[in-house]
Image 1: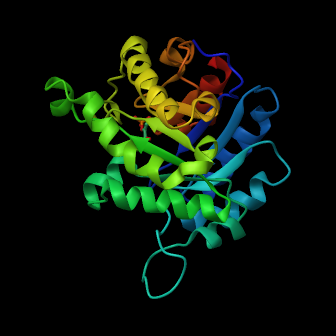
Image 2: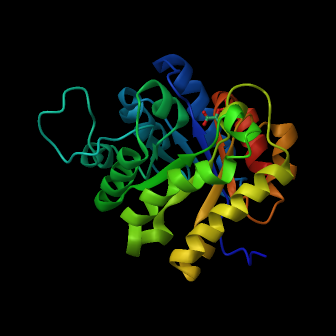
Length: 251
Ligand code: PEP
């Protein structure tokens, strides 16, 4: 199905974890192991640690990014961080629309699309997360939900479709130890790629679609073997350098 011109991306999502001391050890470990990894590695960290991460990873093949970005360019938006600011810290990526932001911060599909567009306009690659809840899956609504979530993003991207990264993260698999089977994930990834292809067939083949949700060293290989699974967004296991690198080696 896919002629893979897509370079695997294993991206860590540290969520709201870390300290200067623990980050230092983790970053050293990831940096030391990165040369032996053939795919691309990235870590998405809490914004206050970006300076530390920038100095620890500069000159290494590991890229870094943030976990959220404002939809606005600048101004009276207390507490928000702009895409231009993230760029000043050398970020390559920013996660947008993580399910924790959609649910705890009431982020709408439209806001997520605006954030993705703002990121891209500044030269950051957005990692746009989509995914259904357990209830939605049980109702057979998975395709409808991910399509609804992705549509405004695709509208906003238009000519820059190939530059986006998508992460399929079934909400019921995040931090729960329950992973989608490779077949379940592949089915949704193929659906997402078909949606992309409806807009732009060529770009659809270039877009990396990551799987996220309890991806660990022991289940990564089977997931990453699927034709439309181009990498992983890794939460818990990205806090341990050897687990994170083991997932990257499975790719
Ligand atoms: C995530 O938060 O993006 C994630 C996939 O978490 P975990 O790997 O811990 O399920």
